[in-house]
Length: 107
Length: 140
Image (cartoon, rainbow over all chains, first blue to last red; front, side, top):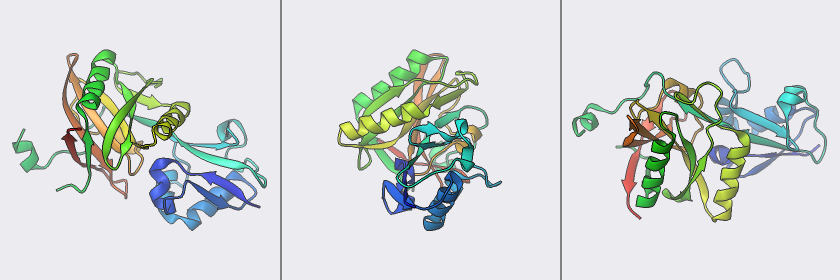
């Protein structure tokens, strides 16, 4: 079965710049596994160290959020379109990247 | 020397600063649109966080789609996002790191006591270990 996965802009460098990838599988989990097998560089950006989808990675099947369906067990069939839609989040707490001493000296 | 750089016009610089000042003491957020490292437009977005907008921002999926559509309409690319750090330095936080997307430019503007100041730009390292600061150039 051919399931098209739409790739958002920040992940296209990992799919040879393609904005869509044809995959196969019976569930969302299957097709995402197929995707990350074909394009291994995607994996750390979609899954955390425990192998769970990252919280800011939203997966839709034909415009329905899989969180409100059967999550990664949501079935897919030929002709379905799966979309990876980012949430973009951030904020202030602990600063993790500092300028180099040379850069700081110019401030 | 960083391999990452992005250029912003005076109008884009002003739009980001103004947005940060308007939403102070809350964080602002928006998309950066342009081509080949030149940001030519911003798309101000709503901060939809439910964790307290003084310290967090969230661009929901529907607004992300809006940003990609806007970029496409302009014949441009979505280059990244900007947000403000009210009364905090323009440096990425652990929370920023945990939620970052690769290849996007993350512009941060510090807003101290309601006045926009330092503006920086960062890229997530491919191994997700940290951010690398890039060069922010001003000019059209």
